[in-house]
Image (cartoon, rainbow, N blue to C red; front, side, top):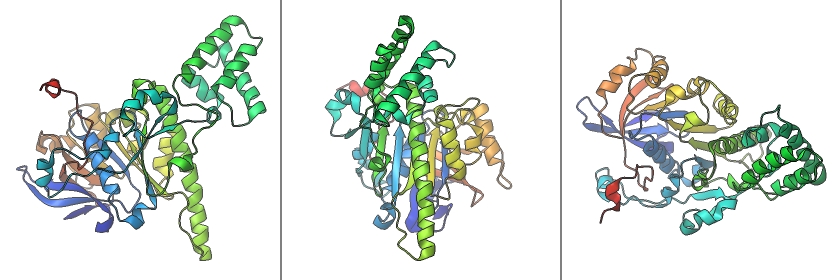
Length: 412
């Protein structure tokens, strides 16, 4: 067997099997889960990125109980596909070839609470609504979400009503409180109406409330959470990136402080069990959350996570079909790279630059000519082992809902 990035087989993910130059499958390949890792999974559309992301989720959920109880898996699901971890893979024949059996996994799926009616028909798979306090966002965040330029008169009015709401209610106000103060203001009618339209639209997203969710309620040891930010198609992308920014920032701060407390207790010889778990964060379409060339609200929190997250035990697994469009500051910090088939251009160049850091490695074009064209094949590199491993990723044990819709699905 090959174990990439570590030395504890019992704390490793079974990824698949090596393939040789003839495409024949040989020994099993595992990826270390004991240490914190920053992983990028890339490849063009249809090569198996989301599938591989799902395999790593499954493997985390099958770790020994003592290890699993001290970590939490958080899946930021902007596309609405990972709820299917709860459903067994119906294609058992492919699993039999690998000596595996279908399995469902106990994940908790959160969705915007105000959009509950959209999830009603599938509530056995979508479990809990989440809400945030509007006070989690500063004025700059609101300007971004509501698409208001800071030079516009609406900006000044918004800042004033937020200040008024905070004076009256502290942290616990909702959007209706802001709306009431806009309506009662002495600002010109056209300015009030423009801001009210935006605030009413934000209220329709169903994510802000005076009774918001606490991060400790969502991130718990032994729990695996799918945060469905697709909003059943109702959430704009800027809302998804802002929510991700808030979540990442909160988890980073909580876990960093908790790590310091653990170390103090260890020095004192006291019980140093964790009160806030280690976190594995999964992010699909990562280039949309931390793009190259400009900042999204989630860019800086994610960059801080990959730069400083190893000490407190924070891991990140990202998938993208456009590694060239991913912020280079993130890609440079990744210790593990899983490369499915890529075509020439900006994306190959970005990955090639990372691979060229390995001793005696060949150009990316060499590996792309060797990889079979079917989905699921990849090359895996890790900074610790400084080797490139050809791997056929194993089948999912749970159902993969990330495939494209095809006409023949609707035929009898």
